Length: 198
Length: 213
Image: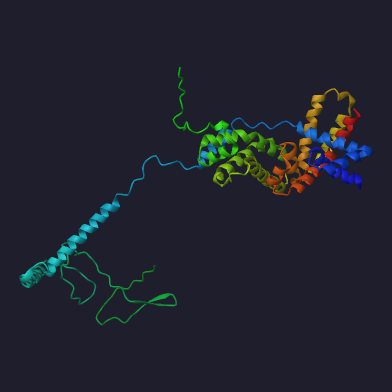
């Protein structure tokens, strides 16, 4: 048991990591135990042999390779200053201009700028519009698929809407996730059916 | 007579030169993305890290790759380094963890040489050392012993091996080894002792033959 205890202290004794009491005890044991002294002799030779092991020489380009990898990992800084997208202010200005023009046109159309004679101007304007509408040739008039509609032949802009097609979608009800077209349409209305899935 | 020394434009003359910086200050500069500081850090520690990895794995080819990986980890986590803790401890902890992973990967692949194979090598070598006519070739014997020793280290169980190499190859203090391995100081002491005794047993045939010559 004493030998086992002594061998447990070999490493710490070599490294001078024992307590004073452990050191004194081990040295006293060595004085009377040849076997443990011989064991310790071999033990120290192994440690000394460890110290003679050649150091590993790193490859000369290890540093450069390591730096190259870190450079690849680090994102490059932007050389050019960040450009603000130009379409945002241009679009905003265009929208603002349209709104102002639209508002002014609306005020004029409703006679709010006209003062005491505005009603007369408005009546005259409406009459002019009707005359223009009747004078507009057929292709210019708006076409709808809704039979009997009174909206036909009302010019609503300066653009030619003669080729436009207005779709009137059938009302659809959903039942258990499936769409079904409601058949109860007003009499006399003929429709082309289509199911549009989203 | 005044002599003006040109200072590189990318360097603040008020800052101390990189080479004279302590490890902590160097790491602080690395955290500020200074590449020259990182290069100096690699220069300072690449040899020690590679040596540790090489001894633990007994694989010189892999040592460089793993050493590079250690420094890449350092670079990635450069801002996580806590000022006040020892840089070498942090580096060796990373190296030890990567080496442990590599050992486990190799064990899984089962391409690591077995203990039985090593015993055969050791016995064969002991026969070579027993030949008295070759006693004069001390250099060759020493090289063979080193080779055997290196292979014997690689067969010591992992947890003892790291303590052994950090102490006997890298010369670290017990306290620092405890920090690197994350175990108490008493555990380090017992692991080192057990590892050395294991190594002694593995090299017993060689040591006995040397005693008789």
